[in-house]
Image (cartoon, rainbow, N blue to C red; front, top):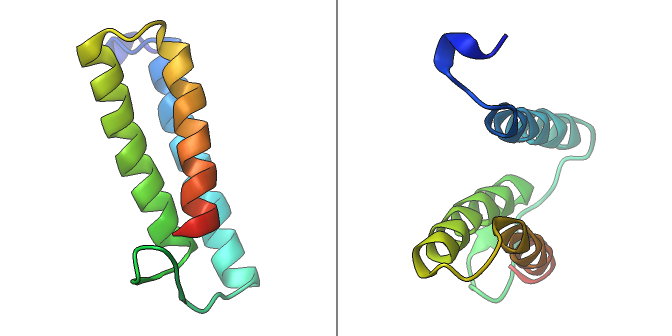
Length: 91
C-alpha cells in the first residue's frame, strides 16, 4: 500500500499524527476560540503558534539527537514530549 512512495509505516504514522493534530487543533479553535496569551517569550501565542513551535523544536531535537548519536531514537521522543509539555505550559 505504501510502495508508491517507498514510505515505511513509521513515516506514514508520523504524517498521520501531524494530520490528526492539525484537525484536532482546527476543531478546538472553532469550538473554543482562544485569545492570545504572553508567556516566557513575551510574545502573544495561540494554541496553533505553540503547536508550530513544538513541531519545529522537536524536529531540531531529533536532528541533534541523530547528529550526536545520543542513543536510541525513541528516547528523543521522550525529550520531545517533555519539550511539548513545557511549550504548551509556559510559552
